[in-house]
Length: 168
Image (cartoon, rainbow, N blue to C red; front, top):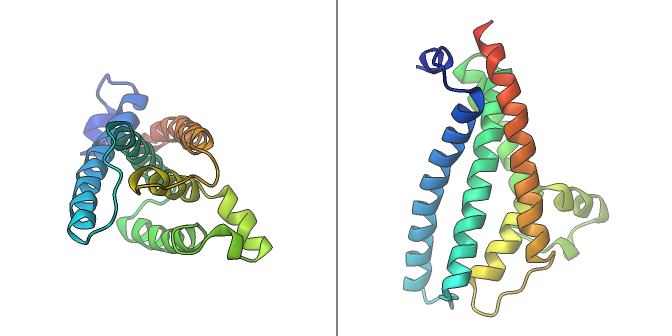
């Protein structure tokens, strides 16, 4: 199917952005489920419309980020088995080297540096600040959004440049 898309007149960037947007729609639907489950469990959620829109923006950015990152990996490896292996190899360290489980302050200094370079830390920081009633951002929401946007833009450029290599 991919080769059919690659021979179409659509620019490669449209294919990359389309995959990122499709991933973002799945991410939004998952966020709705998380909100519903959290409400059922009695979590004190912020239901301010601005916060919900900010959560949607963060989810869209993060979904696009990891989608384009996956496209880059798929461009580098040629078989589905290798792609799945490399994906699993990278997923767990990215998760554990973020602030998703532990606050950055309690991490050893070398892991703090990795966590601060990890885009997932900024997504989690922004989501906690916007989803939870009285939540605060450790890094600042401007940095959370700005860094995620910059990484998505960079990965989109890289994925777009790598796509034509698939037809060779």
